[in-house]
Amino acid sequence: MDARIEKITRESERLIRKQKMSELLSEDHDKKVKRSGVLVDEFVENLGLDTVYVSTSGGKDSACVSRLCKENYPEIKHIMFDTGLEYQATKDLAKKQGAIIIPPKTGWKVFCEEKGYPVGSKQVSKRIHDAYVSPLGAVLTMFSKVYHLSDKWLHFLDPELVDFPISQKCCDEFKKRPAKKVKLNPIMGTRIQESNQRKNAWKKSGCNSYSLDYKHGISRPISLWTDVNVDRYIDEKGIELSEIYTQYEQKRTGCVNCPYGAQMDGSRFDLLKKLEPTRYNYFINRTHLGYILALSGVEIVSDDTYMAKMKKAQERVKKWHIEAKGNDKYFTFKVKWLTDNYADEDIMRALNHIRKNLMYDYEQIKKKIEEAPSKLKKVKCLENDEVYEDVESAAKALDLTTSLVADQLCGIRKSVKKGSKTYHFRRINEQRRIKK
Ligand code: SF4
Image 1 (cartoon, rainbow, N blue to C red):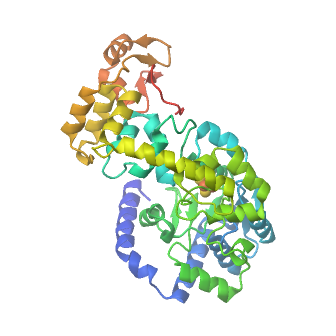
Image 2: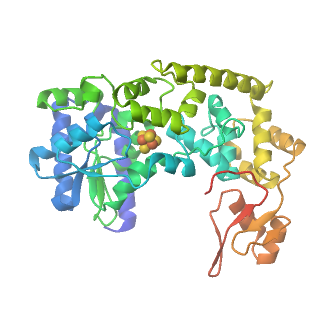
Image 3: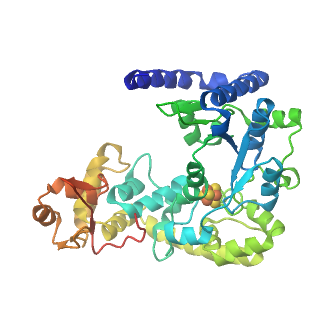
């Protein structure tokens, strides 16, 4: 199909899905199950049984998808990407389902020490990470109406409190990257009820999505199932579940050590302590996870030593917030953080870029930045190791325009190309701790 027509078709399908979403979510259970079966058939017919697999995590949703696929394709491949962070019980169940288990390439601690630990949620981790990557990332984290980091997580930006990297890259490394490497087409048990990100992905691409040449795809046949549908299907089909659900009444399986959402319920760590005490001890006491949980106020009621540390950390956090909040709701703190980490002109360029979406008045921020100017001025070209006094000098010496160099420094542009050469720049006396 012509790419332009394909684009129009996909756009109109997106609009239809947007309008029909609530109707489809409340559809009759049997109809939904039937529709999901048809989606699996369509996916297998389009791509071939040899090229597709059920991506299983040992959780309830993937157990439903596994059963749904086995109805018509009993020999369909099952793959579990072992993050190294699952319960043994979950892995045992996946093996029983006939899954090939692909082990992780890197240890969790080694990865997180270099690329960043997860904190709070994917969004929180990304905002903290991006603040250290570019002025645009920092300005979005501090001042964007939509993307700003919620005040209660701001203490994670204080190098006095947190001297290790934070990022959202953990899932990419342990879940997404291995899946990309197998070069097969996954059938997954994700559902739109789980997150806004999944809802938006469904609105954009639907349950079965394909590459433009229809050679690759991803199927999410139970996207529209609710928790009720999942439980009913499990009951009706007598599907065996991990004992993490059946004996220990957890709502999810998945990574035993994940801090995402733990601030609302830390009981997953009590369970880990009970079931696998050695691993619990490793994660809490020999990685930065215990400290992250303490700074997030997560309660692990079965661990007195941790609880004492957590209470102490929370006293510090409380004090920190009283000081940082001041009389202007963190405004002075945010401006100081920006000017400590980036040059004025880079901050202003980034601010101009999101000027219409700022949560504070633009002039107010500008005035405050002028009052507390940054000391960061010099620019280093990473290709020739030369240091220049400022953006203009760098641009002049390399025969580039100042806006190209400035755009790259503030994160709007990833690189500057001239002829066959590509340039990267950075402010040399900067204090960023996370590599791009
Ligand atoms: S779920 Fe949590 S621990 Fe597991 S890979 Fe994702 S961020 Fe890491």
